[in-house]
Length: 275
Image (cartoon, rainbow, N blue to C red; front, side, top):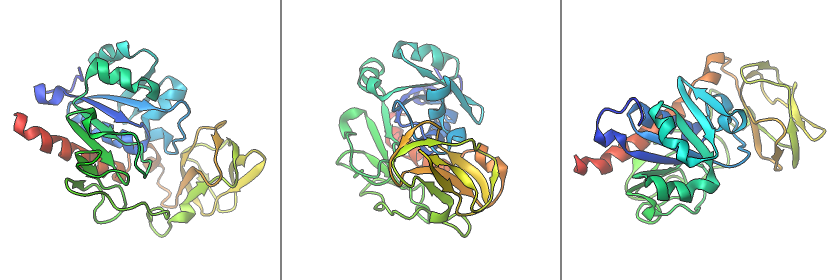
């Protein structure tokens, strides 16, 4: 049981698919509200904002985001023990069906940000919520939360779907696509750069095989994928923040918290008749 639990309503089990920065912001919101959280991830996550993503525990065994600890497990029978210690369990996505059979989560949140329809179904739990494009209320989810930066960010949608995927990333003071570092080709990504470091425009961010990848703007490295991972051509491998505020690299973003707030609203909206 999450040690922050206040009452039976808030002891509900939530399965969050994905453990990247948006999923982790959602987990943070729900954890603080007292829900028991479990998260699933792929074998080699290509998460960019690793310092604020529970997915990092896949590589390190455990990881802490803003005071909340996560542990990567191979055996889902360990989950209750971790919950009793206030820890978020993260497991490989191949165990999702076993987890659902064993723990029977009341809430499922698809936070994988795949931006297209996937295998999530509306009958997976009493409350099923999808983040961003690829979900439609009454079809594969009960509610959708808007993920695109702007006026509607974080809004819980109970009829319809989120805005369609826009290839151009949201703007962070003055820059949009320039702040994103992408792979120039398919290959293995390597880098000695660290999150929180400053980098100047034109400096080498890392390499894909032997091809150098250079920064398009100056700023602080807010995110960089785990080195040694195979990446696809044009895949996002890093994020540079021209605001140059190092602390932002180690705290959950306003975007992730807004989306997490939308998820919390939707959960409480569908739970209100039970109280």
